[in-house]
Length: 325
Image 1 (cartoon, rainbow, N blue to C red):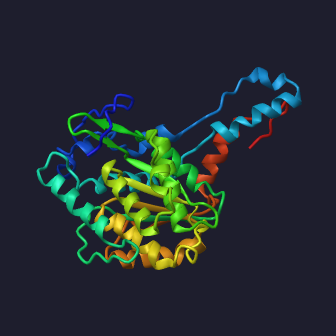
Image 2: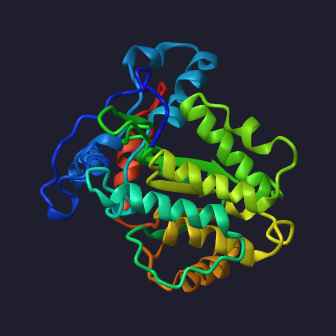
Image 3: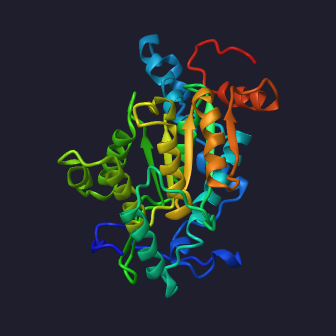
């Protein structure tokens, strides 16, 4: 499936799942164990270094210490646990129909490759929805922390895994930022760049030189998702996409539907509510299948979650006369 030798990448170690549907599939067994809520909190929680003697330092120095909070302070909330559960399921579900131990695996790869090679994926309609992959939208105002939270959770998974027995370089997830005012072609180029950074390859040069047709670029994205056993594609800053520039919303929808329904790659769209509201709804209808729904990323409500957050934060005061809560 892949021509890479893989010695520079982590070799897959297989841990069998307790669930029957996940068992005996190397692409799933190589993933980390499913985390409990307590493990998620432990994994995500971060606290800055705080030394009482620093309080005696000059104010111009203590200002620098305070900035540790922006880098090293994180209190997981309920929404983070929900997001982790959904991402965990999206990645694993995308591999249910792709098992390199099964004889039908290569046959299915060839069938899918035939579709993406011979069909115009900007107009292709896949009538039979038997894909195990799914989709989800995360909407919220800019700066609310949805991208940061998603990054933190995705980084609990290996970026690349090498399966020596099957000659597969597995990329469990990849995140692509939409270029500002970008077209579908520019999105494809961003995908190639992201994969090049991950694998130290040269796909961008290979697939964007000579002004290729958009249909060919989309086919190459789909093919790379197959070759590298990509489980999840996260599309961030979706509001930056210029759908009119991409040849219309329908082309983008057909492209994403093909990834989910044909290639069996799960999709997460992250963006502002305005950008995602209509598109995510039409995307679900076009898939003819229900996804994982959506998460609305709002400001922290003034409830017990806020109280817990402030109590944790209040411990870190580089003040000579600390305020009382």
